[in-house]
Amino acid sequence: MRYYFTRDTVFVRGNFRAASTGVDGGSRPASTVFNHTVPEDFNHAEPARYLWQIATTAGFGEDFFGLLTAVPMRHLCILQYDFITVFVTAGVTNPNPDPTAPHTINIIVASREGLSDGALLETIITATGAKAHALNLMGYPFTGTTTDAVVVASEGEVRHTYAGTATEAGRRIYAAVARGVREALDRQEGRTACKRPSFFIFSRYGGDHWVEWRPEGCPYYPCHFKGQACDFCYCPYYPCQDRDLGEWVESSSGSRIWSCSACTLLHEPDVAAYFKKNPEASLLELKKYRASLEESPQ
Image (cartoon, rainbow, N blue to C red; front, side, top):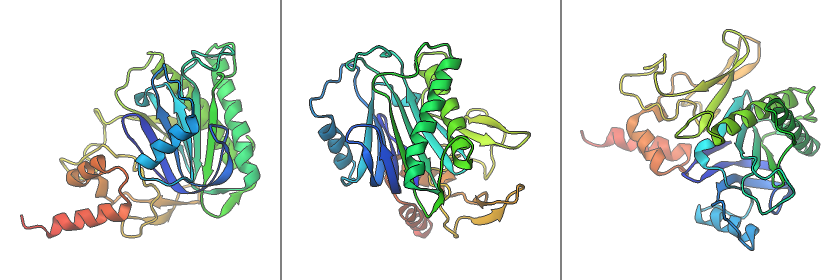
């Protein structure tokens, strides 16, 4: 799984088995899941065709699930909890039964460990429960809006048969969605100012807690070398499992995690700039680009 975002869209790519409650939803294999911002007065007669145009313009095929929102993509919240990554945009101006009202709460749940078909569907229940709980904690008298949607995507060999809140997968999904909905609403409603999407990671260092990473004033700079690019501190390819860039190691809890602490690929300014201009680039393309820079005469 990998992801990137443009000014108005977040794309999540992989070899997924996915389920969606959104436009043209259902359950099927997918290579792309995305959430796209539309104007508040958006009124397209064929939303499925509109999503198809976005996917094909981006160079992707028809095996996708797409969502639409009036929330600006700068208010997107991305939350990583071990093998679960959640993407949330949230606006609640249409809690009443008016499907033409703007905004919505869109949730994408991506798992790097395979979920059974039943677990895919159960994830929708878990995510919806977490959303309702977050809204309740924030004092809203409703459990969602008229246009909310959830997409769940997993890849790899099935490791999780269930995704209820008592399971390893469900516990992570619930925590990430509950935190993500609150953070996304804080941004959409102006309580938290931001100029770009926000990234959160669940950390166990110093006790279990969520950490929002911000490049400004990072206490670890420079973690690799002076002058490094920090735009992709939390790599959108993680875990790439490319043994040229990292390796599997044993964590303090005894599980195996992908360690890429020595990788500087996306911290190299020229490579980071190339990736910004070509966000659809594969990891192999970035490696070849770096190699071409090394071969070029100085």
